[in-house]
Amino acid sequence: MDKPTDRPGTRASQPLPNEPVATPCFVIFEDGIRHNLKRTAEACGGIERFMPHVKTHRAPWIVKLSLAMGVTAFKCATNAEVEMVLGAGAKAVTWAYPTVNPANVHRFVEAAKTCPDAQLTGMVDSERGFEVWRAELKNAPDNIKLRIDLDPGLGRTGAPMDETALKFARAVHSIGRLSGWHIYDGHVKGSREERRAQVLALAEKVRGLRDELKKEGIDTDAIAGGSYTFDLWPADLATFVSPGSWTYSSAQHDIELADLGWQPAAFVLATVISVHKGTATLDAGCKAISPDKPLSERFRWNGRIILQNEEHVVVESDDLRVGDRVFLMPQHACTTAYMYSDALVKTSSGGWEHRPQLGSAR
Image (cartoon, rainbow, N blue to C red; front, top):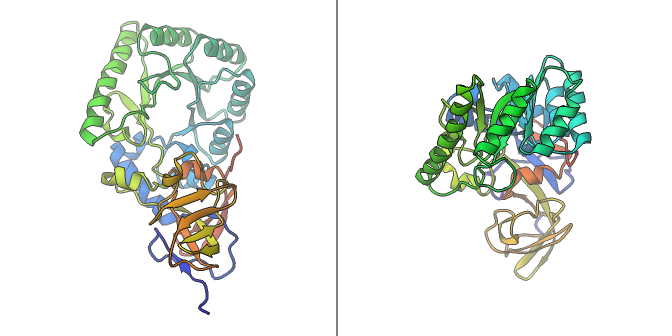
């Protein structure tokens, strides 16, 4: 009987180490990360404008790589990410999460105390949130600022882009902590021209808020954009832009955002553990690939994805054999990265090594 083989799947013939590798395994190709970072910086209009969101990878070595390549500021979703980025040497960190939880805010303030030479920025989008921040900031160091999170139509977080936002901005300014605005427009989709039109309409609203405060002698700037819009925000308004899935790309973005030239750089390595007529069962269930997308879209496959439970996924296949190993390209690579505290990295020098990640730490 023929021996099982490695099937490169969506990754062109990249050999795996000869030694055994436990599966499911999160596999990262460092050359792809470097390529994507360069292409994204170009699309931003310069690396000095690039504020990468670390939730997409949660890996300290990627933060250090970004710093070495010229990135100066980072955006985070959790306190654990803030602490990880500071530990990697970053000097400008934005916590893009408008929490109203005093314990969470206190933890952020404590992180700022440990890094007095770094600038940390939090978010406010409600009166309750401002009161929590104001209480925690009474004895906090000067290296903490706040941004007003704006709702551009996504309907998730953010203050209305009207007098409400101006009121919050004035209140934060009154305690000497105002930095500017934050806009995440993840709802903006469509063709590039359709997205451009939506972004320019949003930019005019933000510009109006900025100009209104300018009349009062209050200067503000903005952090704006997501994967589909970061390269469309006017540079005179958005000091920083913050793409999300640039790090690994995905089975979605390498098609819908092909003009950016991102390369898929992260995969889940799975092993075929059983075969039946017309199907194969792999050891990559919902604990290996994020189930936040519809079943048929969770990873790229030439055929149907039939069933996925905790530890297994069943796919259509006529040629896989028991023991074969395959690369699966997640539809949503950043939520899959959350599932792993360790990744197997193909380094730029050609070797393989395990590198730590935050996993699901918050």
